Image (cartoon, rainbow, N blue to C red; front, side):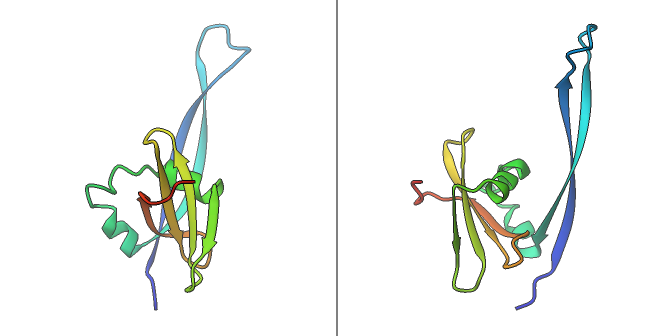
Length: 111
């Protein structure tokens, strides 16, 4: 099976308080994240129940999963608890371990 993969660059701007800055101004740090998605993921992400899933939540599940399983087709399942939603997010990665194929809140996973 062949998947078309899109690469999306996400520019995150985080405000960082400076201890030496007495004027109360904050410094900004820019981080560039690189995430790859399949066309299937980009299509399903348009669904109302999936559109609210934030990129940082997906990144959390990829980088800091609470659990990981390898499927029979060598795709990788990773779960992370999303505090803002009080739910577990399941992310399915292609066998390369980087490309997001699916992401959804897993009603059956209990942690």
